[in-house]
Amino acid sequence: MKTTTPGMWNRLLGQEAAVGVLRASLASDRVGHAYLFVGPRGVGRAPAALALAASVNCLDDGCGTCAICAKVLRRSHADVHHISAEGGQIVVDQVRALREEASRAPFEGRMKVFIIDEAERLNPAAGNALLKVLEEPPSSALFILMTDAPDDMLPTVVSRCRRIDFVPLGFTEIVEILTQHHGVAEDRAAWAASAGGNLAAALRLSKDPAAEERRERHLSYPERLARAGLSSAISLAGEVRVEADEAVDRLKVRQKDEIKEHAEAYGEARGTAAARKRLEVRHKREARRTEQQTYEIVLTDLAAWYRGALLARHGDGAPDAQIEAALGDCALSAPTTSFVDALERIEATRVALSRNAQAGLALEALFMHLGSIG
Image 1 (tube, one colour):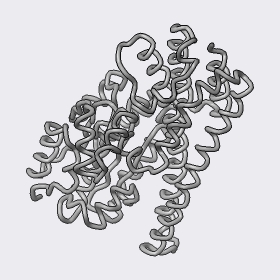
Image 2 (cartoon, rainbow, N blue to C red; image 1 turned 180 degrees about the vertical axis):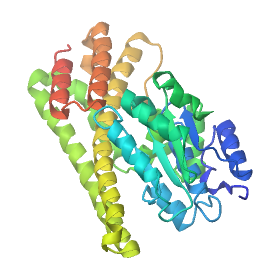
Image 3 (cartoon, rainbow, N blue to C red; image 1 turned 45 degrees about the horizontal axis):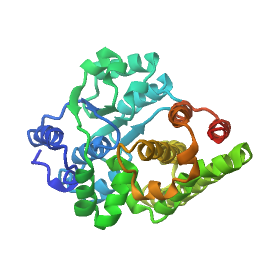
């Protein structure tokens, strides 16, 4: 295999050590069967996983511009599979399906790639099932596990993977990546880096023209709750649910285009039924992930407001301009302990939603609690 061209890798600034190891493996044709990407979310683990998946399938070793690379980036390549938690865990049925898929020959590429996000969420049965695959991996399968908590994983699974560490990115590095590699204007990049906190969130915010207005609305919630109290809690929870539904509706429009493209490329004969089923399953998981991502953004913005209020109260630092503009009477009058309590409740809600709690009830309970602050 030739040396990987930089097309799929050149946006991974700040991760030179990790990228160097992976590209050296590709250049020497010594790619392992399993990797463990360790580091916090939003630092480049997922782009690196996609780059590796493209590089082992692209006819030009990860050029970043061909149809194969484009499919990998869109998460629509038939041989690149994404596994994530369902109901807070990655369950054994998901791993059994992975094992069955891994036993088949690649559909359109050279290797089947299985990218497992939040691998620490593998429950014990799923972890043991995956271990069996990693002990006797199919020759045409590559497994990429991503986690920020390797100590929470089954040690024997960890021992079967080659560990690649990813380091946190600072504000300056995020701005540089957005401006130099994604064409984002510098002021927009600075806002997104400040509001997002990590690269993945900042990139998403920078490309969404409605993101700034949406964040402004989220940052208004604490003051609205302080003024109207419990009476506004249910309506605000409803607003968030509508926002999530709208995000899923936008996703479904893109998914319809992908279904049409898939039908044009592979037809709709009986022989393509399994591929269509995989597409349907992936679309359902994408919709769920999009919904969860919406809640995550709202909770992140809420937490930023309460942290900003604490900073403004104690003079330990200045919140960003958008938070500063959103601070009002509540930020000045409420006791400090209530802000700390609010941050704890927001984090508890985040955890509950990640474990498949009923979103409407969880959000209503959170907003009712925040409405009692004053």
